Length: 339
Image (cartoon, rainbow, N blue to C red):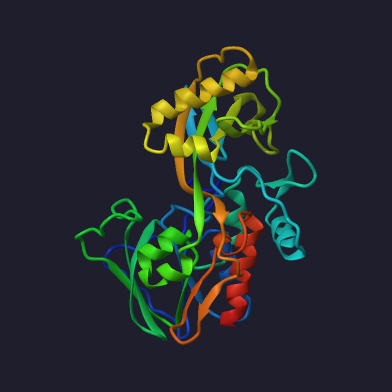
């Protein structure tokens, strides 16, 4: 995940650290839109919260990758490409975070990158970054979370042998990560979440020294590429860097899910060349990123899950629909249930 521009990085605990926990503090695991929405709503009710996220900064799929090649600074929104707001609450939040229209009046992007949006939404919140929460231990009303350096611990992989940092007690724990990662942490919810399904997405980021003969956005039907965009055409970007983001469709990604990154780069840039009707110039920079949990295909069908007896809650876009606003609404619904 990208580091927000000009931001003070969220604190990252040293292995021996365990700061004091205010009475009734709630732990939120995952600082994407659902986690941020829940945290903001609870904080507005005077409930202290602490968020934990494996990324270097909040945002989840609202991510910006930065690179430098031959002295040229490049950036790519390699996760969510834009956001739509149908409800007043989400629209107000986006406006407050400085979102601007692109490529039309109905869609919004962060400026100068998508990661600027969660940076603004996280202002004032207590966030523990670059930490992978691997266990929730204790009892209702006195939960503790055990977490490791995210460079050593990965979702779905065995936990490291090194001792974790333990934070708590917390009056409740809210988990807002993708449903498959919820089950890594809370396997008892397997039956409840069994019907939730995500599609993966391979994404290629590439920069060229000359402008490609293509429109700023493409969404071809029945193609290996599900979406491609001249990312440098977004507001607040350097239009001279000719930066592209190319996202494969779910079917193509599944067929190539375990391919090497360099193979994916060559294949998807070849598909982009076919859309251009001419060979592409050699990219000055190219990289690939695999999102295992990208597009929601089957949802839970309800806004959130809250077990008042266990003091455990779940939220995410997977509760409602495959839209960013659904994640925001799910987090707000969970906060309302808790508060």
